[in-house]
Length: 309
Image (cartoon, rainbow, N blue to C red; front, side, top):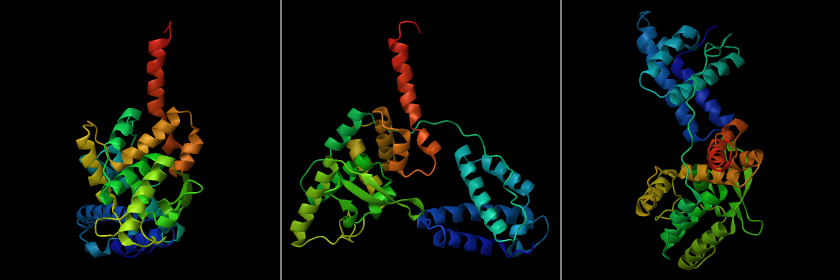
C-alpha cells in the first residue's frame, strides 16, 4: 500500500504514543531515537542501492530481510537486550500502520527476539541498605530532603521517575499510602512505611518553617535548591555521593533501590503478585526476575544445611 516518507511516519507514530497511549516524554524520546537509527540504516543501505532519494523511503519499502540485516548490523555493537528493545520498537511501529490499513503485513512480526542472558538485578543486602540510609544525616533542609528521598524509594519500591513526579497531595499520611502515576499514565496506590513518612514530615516541617506558610498540594514533593522540581538525574547524582561516602562497592543507582525493595519483599515471603502490583509491572514475568535472588539464596542454604545433598 502507498505510504508517505519514513520520517513523517515516525513523527506520526511517536505522537500517537504520547496522545493515545499516554507514554512519557522520556519513553517517546527513546522510541524516536531507535526508529530514527533504523531510518539512518535504511538511507545508507536501502535508498542508496536503489538510487532513490532518501526522503522518499517509506514504511512500505521495508521487508523482513531488511530488518534481519539491520539486526545483524546492531549485533556488532549492542547487547542482546538492546537489540531486543530496538526490535520491539520496530514491531510496534509497523503494527501501528497495519492497524491503520496502510500496510498489509508487519515485516518485523515473524523475526525472533534474541535470546536474553539471565542477569540478576543489582540490589543491596538488608544491612547494606540500612547502612546507606543511616549515613544520610543532618538537620539542614537538603539533608532532610535527601533522607526522605531514599527512605521513600526503599519503602515504596517506586521508580525514580515516579518519585520526582509526585506532588505533596500524593502523600496520604493518615492512610499511610502514596498515589503514584506510573508508565502509560496508570495510577496506583502504594503503601509507605512510617520511617519514610516521618522523614518526609521532618523535611516538610523545615520547609514550612522557612516559608512561614503551608505547602501547596500541587507542588512537587521534593524540591531542588532553587525550589523547582527535582530531576531523576539529580537523584542519581545525590545517591552516588552517599554510596561512595559509606563505602559500598556496588554500582547502586536509584533503580537498584527498587530492585532492593522487591528482593527484600520476596525474601520475607510476600506473594509475587502482590509485589507485581506494588511495582506497577504489567507482566508477572517482569517481577519474576527478582525471584532468582531468593532461589539462589535458598539453594545456598539447602547445600549448607541438608545432611544428604
